[in-house]
Every structure is written in structure tokens, then in C-alpha cells.
Image (cartoon, rainbow, N blue to C red; front, top):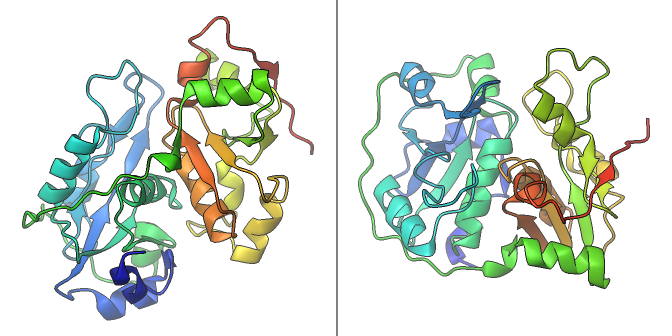
Length: 295
């Protein structure tokens, strides 16, 4: 583990801790906010909202464009090692940089950035619990405009074992390879009249043998904070310990929040299927089942 990670209290830090350490020269705060919209391209980086109000000194990290593979036919897939190294360096992340990621929701986008950095070998990274909403709700200062990062030499040490591909998932479904598939897609609401038809299809479908851990279930209802670790553990109880877990969602954008929580709960081997149902449902030969979530 990178020794710098010892200088972060945990993988999830509080607004109080960040307020005490904000401005330290080796601490970089990144805004990873994304807005979901009902029309294409569906996922929009919130750079304009960032320019209106962001944590003091925070730099914007574009998950949708800069930190995705521009050559992929899928909407959100991780960048190549070379692209990640370049972009992380441009954001100002060096080998001794401590990173705190936040977003405008309850951490699902910050967790994607956390996962990208961890899988690139950078351990000194944490998610801000409560994100921008909790920070502003406490009356803490924000800034407007755009912060120009100071480029650094990012040192990548890729961990491919944090990612799964379609072939690995297929091996679990068809060949009996031992792993737990975890569907992190939100539950289908009772009233689907306002949802696009494709969203209803995705939320009603699962890969055979999967357990359900909808990523919104990990948040405290009515807040932008995650549930306490012991409460999150109850929602993760269906994921078998002692075997690999492969987490997926619609595109791979939100699955890392469940992966993040599984690692925090002590699971040793957790992967994100980066392609998720968008790739799986694009294959007419890939098996699927109707999804049911016990009430």
C-alpha cells in the first residue's frame, strides 16, 4: 500500500476532517459530479455547476470525457493506462498527492473516481462523505470559477484485478466459475410512467445468478451521506464472503460505489464489470433473467 494512504484517516472522510486539512500542499480535492438526463448523451459532466460553486481549491475531474475511453462503443468505460496516466497527471496528481473526491450526490461518482485511481495504483485517495450538499449545508465556504491544476507526474501501477470483462462474467454464468455477481442497478419504482423505455428494461433485467444491492440503498434516506458502515454491511449481506464479487450496473458508472463499500466491509476480491448491462444486453446471446427484488 502507498505510504501516503496512511495520511488519510479512511477511504471515507468527513467534511470536518477535510475542513481541518483543506489547503495542505499535498492535498488535492476533485469534483467528479455528473448529471443524469433523460435524453442522449444521458451522462453530462457538471463543469458549469462546478464553476458556479465548488469546494475551495477543488479541481474538476471529467469522468464522462477525460476519464473514459473515447474509442469505446460504450458510454462509460475506463481509460487506457496511458490515458489515465496523462489525465491524472494533468489534474495534478503526483506520487505523494493525497486525493479527496466528492460529487453533488451521495458519492457514487466520487466512488467511480476513487476506483479509477485505486486501480491505477494510487492508494492515497478518499471519498468525501456527504459531498457538496453536506459541505454547503453546514455553511462552509465555496468558490466560483475554475481552478487551474498544477500538472504533476502521475506514477501508474495498474491493478487489472479490480476490473472484470464480459468473458469473466460469462464464465461465472455458464461455466460455474465461483464468483458472486452483484447487480447495483436501482430498483424499478412502482410508477414507471416517467422513465424512458430503455431504463425500465435495464432496471427489470438481471444477469442470471446475481444478487441485488441497488447502489442507492447504501445512502442514508433523504441525505447525501452514506449509511454508517454497520448499516451498509446489512445491505451487503447477500454478497458471499470468501469468494470474488463482480459488481455491475447499467454502464459501470455507479457500480464502484457498491465495490467501494464491499472493500470497506472487508471483502478481499472485488471487481467492477466495466461495460455492465449496456454491453451485456447488446449481445443477443447473453443470458438474462427478469429481476425481482424482495420487499
